[in-house]
Image 1 (cartoon, rainbow, N blue to C red):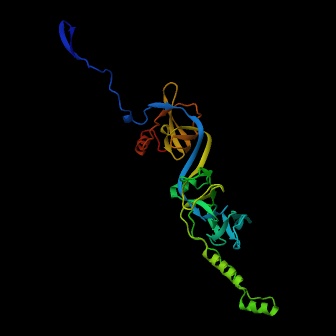
Image 2 (image 1 turned 90 degrees about the vertical axis):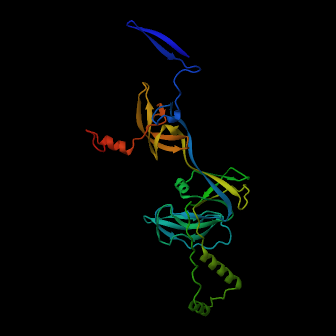
Length: 345
């Protein structure tokens, strides 16, 4: 709709045409997606909650899985001569020790498992957490193959593992066995050699020698075979055991949820309010007068939605979202080249 407005300026009449839009008024809305980072669209305040880091693994129910024993400390490893068991051990079997500062720290195969091989040579120098021996669980376990990224997330020890059999029982606690490292082939030293001919002759002269029976020869052959095979190498995997009342079927698919870290009553903020990562970040604090200041914070756990603030905030601040822009390398270099600004200041 067009209107004519008569304006008198110094005796001269001017007709001004004005247009009015029909149906809508006011400025056109802006697209929030195009707003540059650093522009505070909204704000958030820190809150407190329990936070956990979890890793989900795909596994299978496996019969007699092999797992590794690690050096409890760094030092020189010394193995014991472990006898071949005649049945599944009901108590832990002491395998060896790591010597440091003149004293041993022992490592053992847990009850329900048997020793299957040395992964390093006797009297080797090892570091804490290094696989030194392999063992085999007697019965069902759940084994999950993992990649290197997952391995580094859970390498420092797992708080807990929960298992779930696909279309079966669960969730249930799954007890972690040994280390998650890939294991090389394990070897078991051959047993001491039998009496030599000279010793046999001497035994015969003394009347103490006796020829072995067929059963004794068979047992000796079984021991020699067991001592020579050891354990096969494994890929990078995690092995755990389910409670005795959980029914397991060999080869059944399972999911393992590994809780790697926990933090109770942690101070958290939305991840969108933080710039940076890997333990260090920056947030933009909005003050009561509307001014803003950027603060450094130390970051902790995250679940992808919120991130823990370990230091740098008290919890009473108001933060702008999205978080601040981090300066680029070129911007930092330009700032350092300005007059009166020293490099590294």
